[in-house]
Length: 435
Image 1: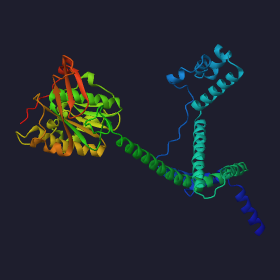
Image 2: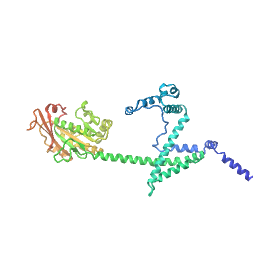
Image 3: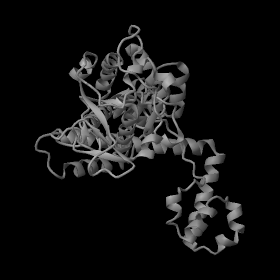
Image 4: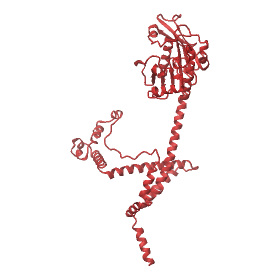
């Protein structure tokens, strides 16, 4: 009786196979199929879905078209044909035997993928397992990098020995069971580690790029002061220009043009409605009806930036330009001096620029053509918290050509000699009369 029982037990073990797997699956026990399904549901976020490649012809970029030969273009066209069409195509008959073999093989595989569901599943599985191998190979390299005294040939020896082991005969059910019990849980852990590491590396690279961006000054095109080390605008200290409205508008235009030429992303609060000539890929223009009073509160400024700037900017903002700071803050009492309102507006705009790593260029345009007096009390905020500079206009000078005016910022050694008609062609903003 003992011998017969042992034989029956050996017979049962020998008969294990597909029927055994199906039976376990139907019984609802811990079958390999059920376990695989359960593990598949716990797939880590971020894994790309497995998709079957489309072997049909693809659109070739123009840069590739320019480098293709006539024969390559002909083969590219023949790759769209199926097997039947290829055998009857006279251009295919003119191809070499090697090219015809390639075309027929491609047409056959494309037809197989289109017509056969199992072929598509096999293709997807082969791609997935190949990618899985790459994931594990990367993890092996990471593991070896952490080991002190790792010999130079350790990686090659490790891989070659595993390839030899993989070439040995194996049982498919044991493979499936090992895949469910070991491979799937482990790759989930590895992918989680890789996703975390990749996200950290991407974040660090992004932060490093942002630090480099914020460390780069905004080019002005001239030195504001004779002692200035460079013709640039610091991102940490605002520059505010006050003076005759037309001259201030001219200087703002020169600075914005120079900043755009230097690759900066500029946001400009225009005092006049934007015109077609002002368009630029890195210039986000905001009409006055949108930004007027935006500095009455931080929330108002955030709304303007979200609704009018976010979709227009090509990159992070490097320079914010406000054509008239006084109009950005309208919550003061009636009769408050414009320069004082400009100081209140600057406080809100400066906070936004500090958070975004942007430079700030503001203006206080005045109705008078006289030199501005920046010593008056209403300029106190701007004198304290900004580099406040006056803009002056000279109609006469020893070396000034006839019909020109000379525009200068503060005590700068730089000046612009501008034809009078060009200077007068600038649209004058809404003028502010000093109190």
